[in-house]
Structures are given as C-alpha cells and as structure tokens.
Length: 145
Image 1 (cartoon, helix red, strand yellow):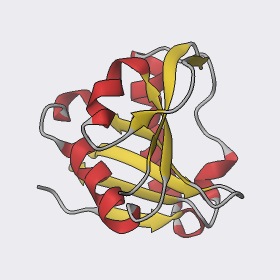
Image 2 (tube, one colour):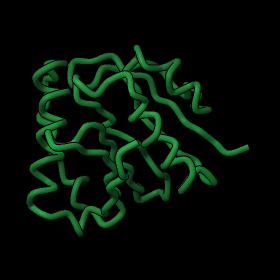
Image 3 (cartoon, one colour):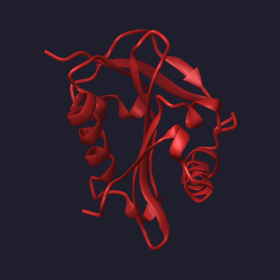
Image 4 (spheres, helix red, strand yellow):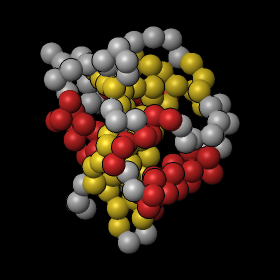
C-alpha cells in the first residue's frame, strides 16, 4: 500500500491543489461528464482534510472530509484514477476516515451505484435519492453503534 498523504485545507500547497483538482477533473468531469464545476470553497476550509495516495503519475486515489457548521463530518469527492482501480485504495482511504473520526456521525452523498459499497462500511440511506451534477445520488449516514 502506498503511503498516505493527509493535509487540511489551509495547509495545501499549490502543487497539491493542482494534483487534487487534476484527479477530480479526470474522474468527475472527463469520465463521468458532471454538469457542475468541481472546485469549491470547501477545499480550502480549515475543517477540511484531504487524504490521498499517489505514485509517480500523480494521485491514485483521493477523498476529502470536512465538518459543516452544524458539527457534522461529511465525506465527498471520493475518486480513484482509472489505472489504479481495483486495488482497494478508496476503501483504505474511507477506513482511515472511520478510524480517525468514526466515533461521531459521518454523512455523505453517494453516487447511487455505490450505495452497496458504502453500506459495507456501515453507511445507511437516510433520505430520498436526488440528482447532483447530473448524477443520481443517495444521502447516507453512518452513526457509531
């Protein structure tokens, strides 16, 4: 397993921002043809933590987690570069989030086809399906037992 990179939104370097936006652009905009721009103000917030694995070709798998004003942690922008898929990298990143912050509620908006994958980590659907950036999603939450 490659080494984990982890940094908060205020500590990101320009090179890290570029690498993060590159993988997210490749996956969400090029592959999935999302209708909305990916970069947002959440990336640079002090409550945002970016986690990723990388190789010589750049980031292989990435996710971000952040805490909203109501104190709830969210997971989003989970993606893996096409040539790195199938190695369990996204699952490892999600387990890292659960190890660090799983003592509290965690919410996410799962792409609908990934509902069962997230359910395997203890997330349950907690609302009606919706469309975001032209892609079907379901709201999910994980409350510690």
